[in-house]
Image (tube, rainbow, N blue to C red):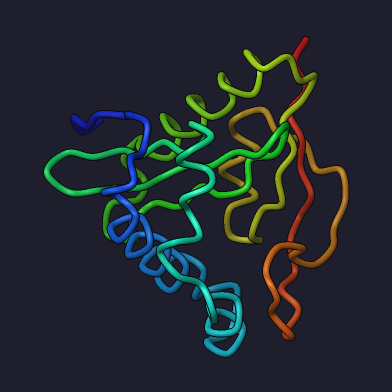
Length: 156
């Protein structure tokens, strides 16, 4: 495991969060989605899209000397969890996931819901999430459909 810190995101982080989002989607999802699908998924996104979650204290970042990844929630949903492609598989995703899950639990929800990219399903499965359905990405305005897997982790 590599040393990094998890903290609440600030408005000064938005460009670096955006850069991680683009890097992660293009590098880690390329095996499961076409270039056209990824480009459409990311089209129209801007750094400003993270401001609401930051202001709600619902966005966390992992960093060492660089920003490594981030997680965002809205209610019971984990809406985003992205790790820089060159820094994946080093414990960052797990730490961000548990931070987000803890926040959802503290808010009193009975479960965490998410829409996983197909490449991320094994990761979430290893961390207690169960498949509850399949569908297409429901966030954003992409005219191209992206297959996703609906997953949840219930609190006992």
